[in-house]
Image 1 (cartoon, rainbow, N blue to C red):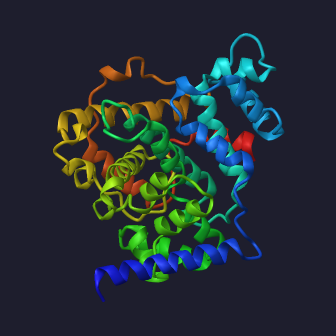
Image 2: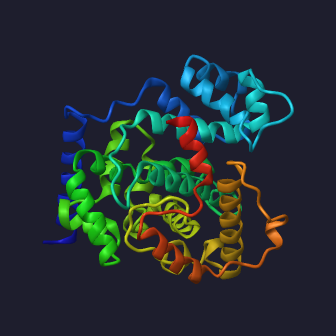
Image 3: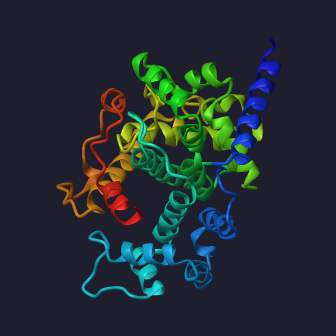
Length: 350
């Protein structure tokens, strides 16, 4: 079978699985009308977002309104006085943080719950997705990319794993078997899923996102992030940065993707692009260090856990290969040491 025919077969199977799920008795609901607007805000440059308009979008939804207030009064953001108004909460948190948190909470509430599987839990899934999204937003800085926006990478990172979530809900037994095989044989989960289902989780995710009418750039970023070089040329960069964010999230040891192995940054599409600033080893190490420290500090301090790191940028650069080995070992059991942020998230979201 030619590569083109094989790709078409995988695409057809992903389409079939996606639409069978969308039409099943236990279906993934259609995207609510405010959902596309909420995710569109995350893609906009922060200086173009209208705060009163954002407030009007949040205020009619008691769950979103309450979440933003609780975040503003959490140990990480809490001031002397308790915040009781939405506008004051956004001012304390910061507009970007408020938009990021609203997107995370919205998706957690909107998508169905999953059964707790060994090596794949809702808490670890959302923790890893958050880490991937935050890493992606940082990688989207204009100095590091050519044609990719921070918000696009944030949404791609947040949604990159929904294919796994769908399979965990609707094919839990088979999906659990795939996770076990990936862990035991230290294999990438998507290759195990391809063998079992004839398609991959990222392709299923892309089809579902297309059904939700999300932008094609983000859909393609998710579809091709495992192999950006196979994407149409106009989508290779955004898929490459999504792949890079995914690998950083794995290094962070925050949450768990269900993967059986954590591959290094040296094999990413970005590292192989001479024209890309991040292909330069020294800059790459600096950015990865910055992101890992930022993720670690926030995942701990937002839950009220004190940090001994006073000046993160001056800390020694992390041994990325060592962290990769640790990540592989820890993630194989589906456990995360840095779960403070999502312990707090879980306490207010569930």
